[in-house]
Image (spheres, rainbow, N blue to C red):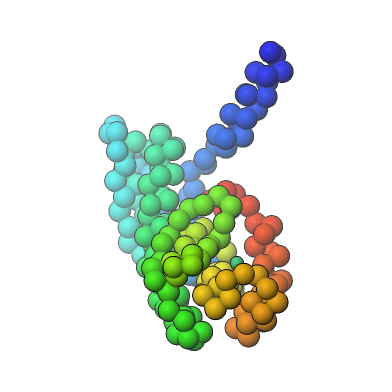
Length: 180
Ligand SMILES: [Zn+2]
């Protein structure tokens, strides 16, 4: 019984990795740093204001979970804005067309591509280098030509991203939940 409780407790701690309010969001992929300023207000919600290099959060900022949800939502919109033209340009270059781009926040995946041509990209790609972001975008689009990870897939990808294998290795070692 004691052992069970102990394990349960440890599990809960692992699930509840404390979210530290970020003071700055270093969005290397789009070469931008955004300052985050918090204003506590006795309200249940959080309102967000954004201009170019600064975001201001007003509201119940003591609710860190709510802050995280608010920031995630903001970053997803920003990611969609920035990734869409890059994806479109890359698709043109590859001579493929995708159906729809969705921005997600998965804990273990940078991106995916469905057989229907829907591309999913993780908004946390904002935090990696431009080369790493590009790699994921091309990787997913090349799946529209080769729906597997065959030799042909990697050879095609290498035409556009010569360091693809090296970057793939780097990406596997980044913990997505430690990025901000
Ligand atoms: Zn893949």
